[in-house]
Length: 136
Length: 94
View 1 (cartoon, rainbow over the protein chains, first blue to last red):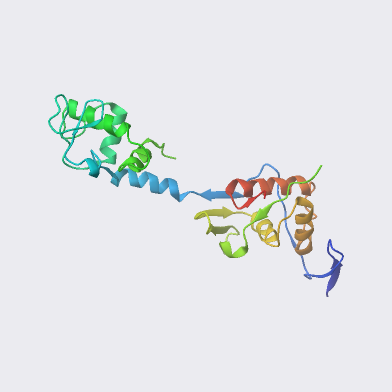
View 2: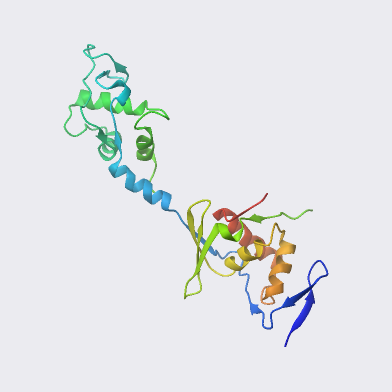
């Protein structure tokens, strides 16, 4: 059995012999769920990303208590940490106000203040941004 | 009142896999996102592949291939489905 019918332009179109029933559903029902891998990646990257203090272009300079980068030996400033700070330990220090593992209070304050001043384009900014992002 | 016109990416922008339990997994290449679609969302998306459409045009396309007699408010429910696809980024208003 074959059927023919007119479409909206008046042209003949072939119609399948048995059109399958299709329920468009209740208006309140949801039929689309989106998997968001970007969030999962963000959650993972917090554990592994690192923030250089200061950025490589200022390597060797000291960090003032307010987080600004100053010349080595500047009174009141602290020497750089000597290693990249891990995203996870920075996250803990920012959240709890505590010290970074292996560093004293003054050093930790200077380093976290430096990180708070990071702006887009600076080394470590993406890591800092991902730390601040709530996990979904 | 003019009806909203919707647009979807061409079929080759998507990789669709129909699973045994009737749901369709859609990988949308432009966004890199994966969506899980239940009927009638895959059918609506397929009908959108023929080109921009408002709900009236889309109903005509769907009726050509499917029996829609089980749904009372075709325009209302189809609009709800389109808004879901729009939220997911699979269709949009050009």
